Amino acid sequence: YIASFASSLGPIPWVLISEIFPNKNRGLAMSFSIVMLWIGVVLITQFFPIMLNKLGGAFTFWIFMINAIILVLFIWQYVPETKQKTLEEIEKSWKKI
Image (cartoon, rainbow, N blue to C red; front, side, top):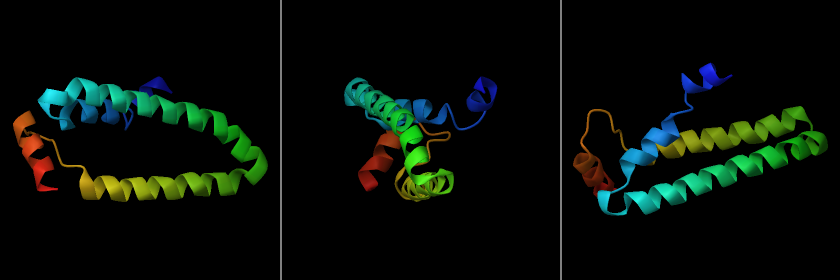
């Protein structure tokens, strides 16, 4: 599991949040982002078994699939590409949005 997670999309949130925030508030913004990330992990961990028992497997996974599609569309539209860009260039790309 760990090898699959580490070699796929697992590290992307950690890399992304370290790059997208401006230098002046990076520490506070990263702290907030990490707290929100772990709150989401705890909520999913707690509610998944309940949803599975009450709604059944198919409907539960449909909910997660629809959520994933919405998030992919949001990321595709609003999150800037950071490949081979300096932190200053990334900060400028946020000002265009």
